[in-house]
Length: 414
Image (cartoon, rainbow, N blue to C red; front, side, top):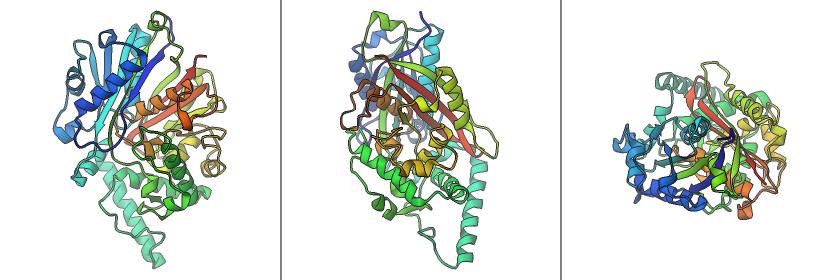
């Protein structure tokens, strides 16, 4: 067995709101899709890593989620490992599968499935709160909200929708991203319009993606005019709640026995954890490690999928990943550099903002998109001649940043 690890096949369900489908059904659709993509059968899979975050919260299915979901779809008897790492769960499953191949397996599966939509909106919002240091985060949110209230009182007026009642509630992560965005605006002069440029790009890209949750375009003005969630973030700048699944098969020396011109090489797979430092540097640490492992730099990346739970998420990750200097993420987006025909296209799938964000599947949806791009099979959203692709997937919150983050760098073989 060689040292290289490949992605042989990818599969993904359409993301959206599927009240009539179960986790088992979504898992089966993704599994069938990935096997069809690479022409393999269930019996050839030696082990599987299953990512899910909220099944236990919604349906009390804890502990053996992967065994339950996969056995219902004809995959059992093999090692099945359950992965839970907040929004980074699916990419952590891929990282684990990558390590398994490095350790001697030949053909393994990474798969993620999630159902988040529920008619009880409060249940949806509560599910997000498990991905933080709950005690510390609630203290921080209370402090931030009090600071906003005092500021509005001092100004004697409501500013740009900051005082609007938040209809239906929202994830506490939106408040977290909003607070980071306001700090960035104060420090670097970043504007709300620059965030709207990023969100409009995401919606316009996803309009070309038939598997996306949102398939309608938006203008910058429409993004700005949408309902404020937590200033400066409007609804169109934030990822939607949805259900979905994504899967990939990861293989090594197995490729020689099953040659494929569509296989993609994993040049780097890195998983890092956050710290309690007052300044989060997890994106920089993880990307530097990935660049070193792959033997490349940020200037060598041709297309990227980054964790944009909000438009500010894309902006700050472009800085952390080295696509631009600190404080230049806004101008980078405004310049068109991150558009489909730009210097470094970011989130051609529409990203979490518009493709959708079923937590346990999002990281593998990024991989699905990048493999599709490297194969030249992305249709109207195809980036021109990409050879190297990067996926950044963050999850949860610890201290002032993400609790977990993976970086994968993929390479086209021919």
